[in-house]
Amino acid sequence: GKTWFNDVFELFFKPALDKPSYYEFQVNAAGTTMDMFLPKRGIDDFEKTVRDGDFHFEAKVVRMGTLDNRDDRDTGWTVEGRLPWSDFHRTGGRPEANAVWKFALCRYDYSKGVDPELSTMAPLKTNPYPNYHFYEDYADLKFVGSRESNDSKTDSSVSSPPSSGEKSTLRGPNVGAATNSKETPHPNPLPSK
Image (cartoon, rainbow, N blue to C red; front, side):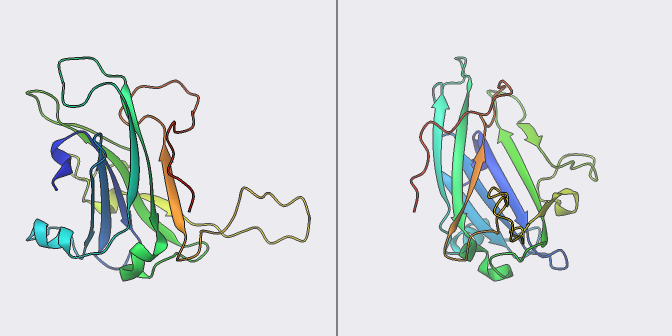
């Protein structure tokens, strides 16, 4: 559904810079997800666009506070999600090493009786108001391949993206909360597949 009417974390990916299509994935503090492929900016039929796709987006949410009680003081929530490269099949699936996509990580939060609070890691400075669908302002996301080395000391933390059947995991510390600088593991992670 229209999860952006809640406190929601949104992910936008635009794999092809020369085509108008892009993807949007959302998860709210209740764990409700929404996913869609947008063939172009400015869709005419939201419901049809959401139904037109078979995504396998998974998300797990942990709340530090209550849900749907805006009169109390919550400390935040965290989300961990993953989706298979095959969900990007309309734009080529798994990216090649050194491919550059555009992306934005955003939060949209309605507070009681006021305009929504918007936050994003992308600059979104072209328009007079922030527009999460203005992909020209998204940040670059570069995919790196594994280091080619015969040296046994190769850094194993740098590797190629998973194959098309594998899932890529997205993690973020305390979405929507002020946190300390230490990143703590998600207290209830998604199981490995």
